[in-house]
Image 1: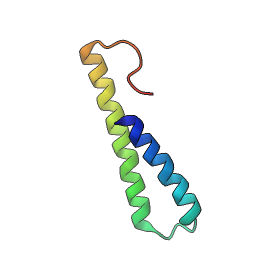
Image 2: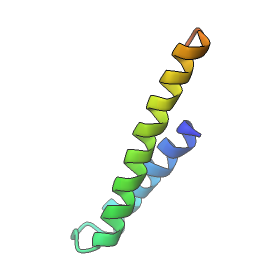
Image 3: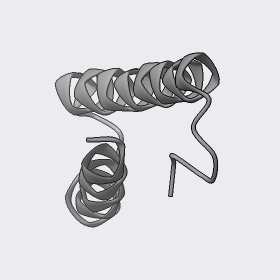
Image 4: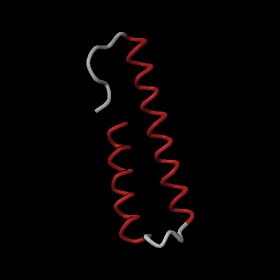
Length: 61
């Protein structure tokens, strides 16, 4: 899930640079901000899961 979120965010940022470079689309900015905050929350949850289960290696990529 976390990797998918990173890919979506990267694609949306690229889309934003190409089509919304004038920064007049407030809704698009809000959507991108929500995706970024969801990515951070997912990363924290994965780190917590890693600590609780004693998993070794990197959970995030």
